[in-house]
Length: 310
Length: 184
Figure (cartoon, rainbow over the protein chains, first blue to last red):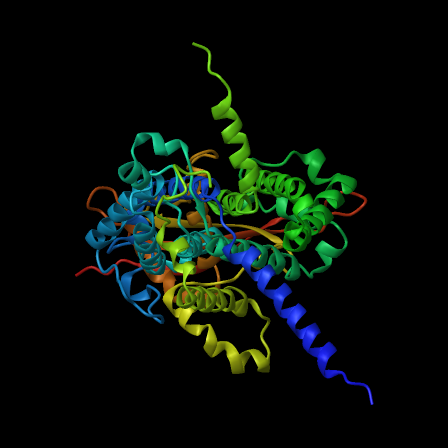
């Protein structure tokens, strides 16, 4: 009779130990806060841009006499804040502008991110006819960023607590909130890839069709590009390949710089040719969450150590 | 540590994971948020129907997920919605979407284009009358509203690219709603 109790217990113990170590590295091992600060600043600027461009069209898109009347505002959800008049829409837009500035500057960003989420939901539910994926991503990022210490560096909060000199230093912070935004990003890429099951994506011509949908083009694509079978095939299958790679291979540390670069390139080209609003800038902010915070810290430290000319 | 010194008080997010209770809270938060992020994307199925109660509160609160872009194929139509307003003197004017430019204006115009894409659909017929009424106010000559506004959708089919290039198609047009001024 072979006694398997002891080896089994050892295996279980080893597995548990490895799981604990992996969990610790993933969620708890502290890293410099620079990345979170940079993401917060860029996100604040995007919220400012989103709100400022919406402010121009408050009367037409959100007001009492807007294109979509109040009774058709999305009301099948929890309505914790309803914009029932032009004045209410203006108040929401005004507070969103204040929130975007506070987030960018790092003045109590966690609280302002929660306020931003609530107000974005309210504003976007007022007129569901005008929303795209970027608008939904904007509010999701607002909520997820609230789970991160985004004000730990490059912020008014840090300046007030530790003085002006502290602005050029960053504490180490637990990265558990960062994992959520990385997960959200990978989910976007995976289901964008997964849903592209049509024949035009399979036969490599989908991008030509996209370029010819006049009502959503931004800077029109040149005719020689739209009709070039080889280039269109490269762009179509390249899009699928990059989306799949960004879902899976981003987690491989060595491949990250290349993949982040490819992701930026993908969104740059989409933004040039297609009207996608704030989707591209937001996805680029999400890609930054995969950048190497330790590498960034070393670069900043090296720059600080370099003697400046008198 | 890259901060001021090793004794710097950590932020609330980092301090939370210093205790066992804090770690448990973080574990629950990460699991719940992960389910809320992944769950709504699961394709429709009887299994999904049974478990979607887990993430429905997130969707109700506004934390939505839907990332199907240009899928399963890109839309095979280029489209435009215009309105023709007729005034009491018989003159007409055509209303089109505002031209907002391609650089900064692109961050406004995508909303109008989304409205255009959706308003043309029969499934959104409940929005037609109010949209036409808004257009009537938009094209009004001072206090004079047009007597009628006709909503028209125009579209052109986009044929797939072939080895022989692309095939041009004609523009189609269909009047899908008429709004009439109610004088009172």
